[in-house]
Image 1 (cartoon, rainbow, N blue to C red):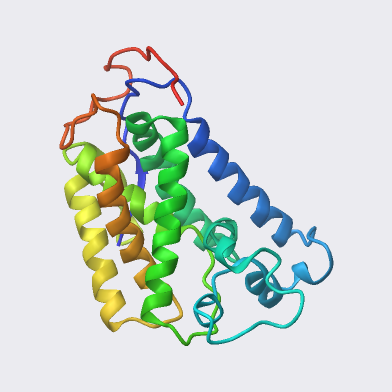
Image 2: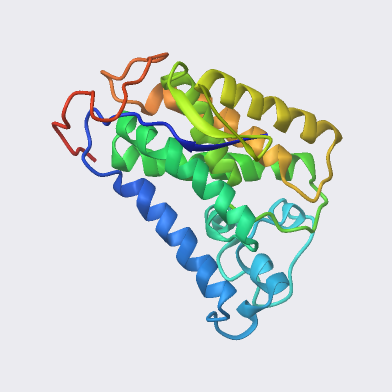
Length: 244
């Protein structure tokens, strides 16, 4: 597997990737509150927390019901709330690395508001794909993996020739074109969705990736080309706008 670390692409139109860093901060703060046992009452329990905010396919599709008091938000809203809940540090770290590396440049290509909509829509699409593949499951789906998979798809279409530093097989440092890095990653997701355990929401990854590839076509700025090469940081045009 390839874990991205740094890409070095300059921004064209924004100065600060506000939406990207806001999502990252919210996800990290929620995890810190959970890990440090700062959440009130039963939310300190992993099972109760995931049921309170995560997507449970059988409940979402109406074939099962939760006890009174669960979930803490309307069931359709769990398609969004579950994206910010991570119950393990490695799960959080992996998703936030993808977000930090790919999110800011996708945000630059869309603008802040459209990027926020894009991110949440990809996460929701991933959760729906997971629910469609496991309609009777009572296992809650949590985490931003579907959303960051959508980011990977958008980045692939926007900057396939950008060079990304990362760890191949989680330990070997390499710099490779985004086409190779993300192509290898999506191939791994497909294999795992076919042969892997249901304990991981592989279908959510694939659903988010498909949504990201479709949504970037309509949400990118009108002057943002597809299949660009990308420009190294410090070498591109200075930022000239900070549009929503």
